Image 1 (tube, helix red, strand yellow):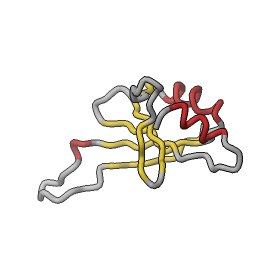
Image 2 (cartoon, helix red, strand yellow; image 1 turned 120 degrees about the vertical axis):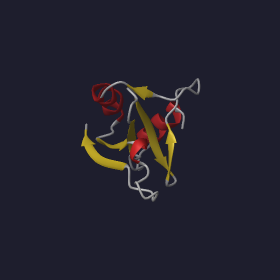
Image 3 (cartoon, one colour; image 1 turned 135 degrees about the vertical axis):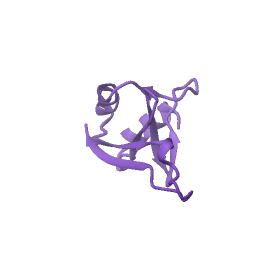
Image 4 (tube, helix red, strand yellow; image 1 turned 180 degrees about the vertical axis):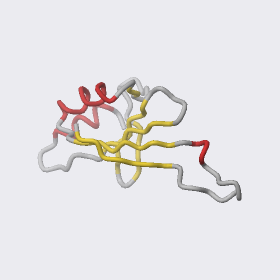
Length: 100
C-alpha cells in the first residue's frame, strides 16, 4: 500500500483506523511496516514504491502518531525456530500491542 493511500484512508471520516503491524525479523536491524487491508497484510511503501523500514520504535511513533494511529501490533519472527527437531512446524511468531 502506498503511503499516500494510507494517509487518505486514515484521515477519511467515519473509517476505522487500519491495523498497523510492525514486523521484526531475527537478525535484521530494521522493522518492516505493514497495513492490514482486506484481511491481508500489505507492506507500506513510499510514493517511489520503496518499502518503509524503521530503525526504532521512536521513529514509528513519530511517523504514525500525527496520522491518528494510537497503537500498533509488534510481530517478532524468528526464522531459526521454524521447525522442531522432529521436523514439525512450530509457532515462531509472537505479537504484542504497543500503544503510541
